[in-house]
Image 1 (cartoon, one colour):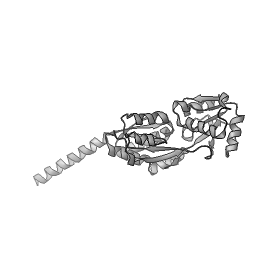
Image 2 (tube, one colour):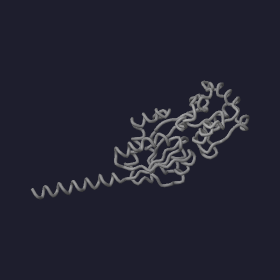
Image 3 (spheres, helix red, strand yellow):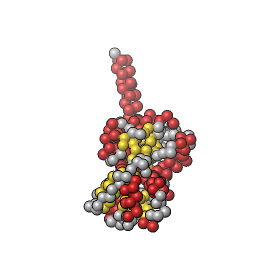
Image 4 (cartoon, helix red, strand yellow):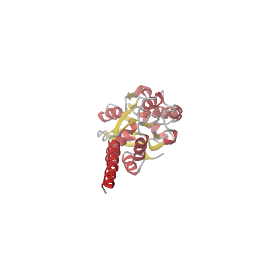
Length: 254
């Protein structure tokens, strides 16, 4: 009997030690600014559910992708297409690709201002040509929303024509702040970044001229604990996450 109790105690202590080690695990994540709002909201739920901690760092779409390709050490990167350079770098586990959500570039105006018709490409073109000033994130600085909108302007054939009225921002928050203050008439960025109380959201750009941007997570080949990294990705693509994505005007999954 003494031997039995002793063995049970050893097993319990071993299990407790394993659980304690997992509870102290810190999962590092990097992601672009378009994923900041949902991931920030979701981290507390994951930590409460698993006992693990998450350290998240957010940057531009281009900057985040460069970190992955350069081989920086972290557990979970969230990146945007094209994904081929990320996989080719050998710094992510290819089979771990996990679609989290897609997010569209949207239009905002100062709170209370008239909302333009952006239901068609023609309506968007008319809005941009008639606007006195426009702000959106600087694509040359790596902002994915800016890269996407630059492509939209080229599709509409007015990229060069409207350059004099553009005031580029360092990120989506900057663009929305300018719009809220009335410094610009029209502001654009990802819908998930439109949280300034001084704006009214008009809606997303038509898909014919602006393809929603996907957010895809991977397990890094440099992950300290691949199982913990996978657990975080599962949570960020699960039912709790879907509710948060929808609340932020994003579409869960691919």
